Image 1: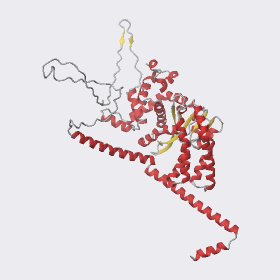
Image 2: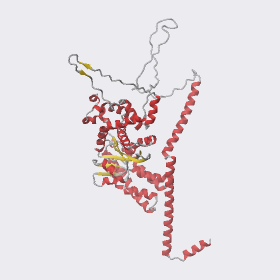
Image 3: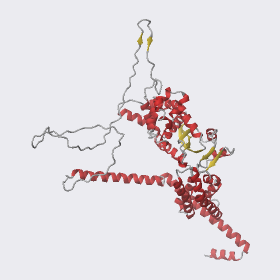
Image 4: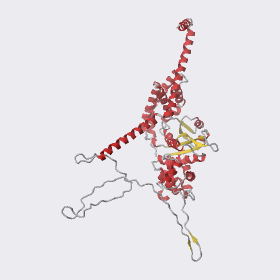
Length: 513
């Protein structure tokens, strides 16, 4: 108490300028303390989300648990219904079910009555009608051995021997047929099933295919499909706007027994949101590290708009004026959202809501022609963005420069020209979601097979991800597509490789037969 009185007495003895300096110093200390508290809350929240899973992942887990509980309850209820005898007065309720798919083959079993004549009078029976019901049955996966026999024919006069040429195989002298090879590729890179697990599944079905054999098939298939991947790359980079992103992928470092962090880069061409009918495609590229020289090499021939995040390795691409940056509003929103979740900040909440209003406009114009999208954006989104810019600058002046909210605001303001570029060109998207969607499968696979065995394995993964991803973007079943490609690619001239691109494949089916 005495110290407080002394402090008050000391304050009374100070002149106006000294008091103002002391107040400013105390205010700075409080601001810095508040900023540190805000920052620590954000870091803790992020670490907790890393430990316990993101909110969306938690919700997904809760949904899974509820679905399991629902399954058990429904099964239990069905068990009671099945055990209860049916009554003519209280018939069992019929569940509404979807009709079975028309494309499935039908096997008709006709059940005639045991009676040949009328059981009442012995008269002849005539067909009055019929009741038809269907059940869905599963035919287990089957394997077969195709034996190619080539008789040798000789001439009785001159001893000339003739024989049909050996049919080509996807892998020279390999035992894998196109359908089996396509299944292994899709199981690994689309269904995220590691090769050693596939080997175990084959073993259960009585087929011994060890992991090294399957790995050999993947490598050979990647080499065989390389020209098609190159055609996909050219198609992607011929666009005037592409999406780009990258993700880490662990790769076994030779001789160390440890893994190094390599990268898979994705480049996506998808103009459907702008109402264009150009075919979507994705090209993946592998690199042993994340140096900026890799995207510079990948995009050396590209000219146009690059939609990407704020990765510094992309920045040098915009210097020559051949590539223009279109930044991602989703990344801006995410920074404010993290703060909102961690601190319940009113500023972060308002920022998220303001950005959300821009997305509402985008949902309305998605799929419309580029000119209309640009017109609507100028009329409705431009005023919102101009107001957001003024609001962010006003808020920034009130915040400590070290606070996380200030950092999020400066992140947005530093990229403002790139963030607002989509307003002037209807072909540009508001964010880089197309690239992030392309990388989701890689993230799932990474959890399952942990790492690639080598740089060559990373390059093979990039090749197969490119073809599977492009097939999916074009609503084509990747396994059926790869099977047909593997049947034809070995015998197809390199000048006709474009015919095997997903959107050309159906068109050239007759020519390729």
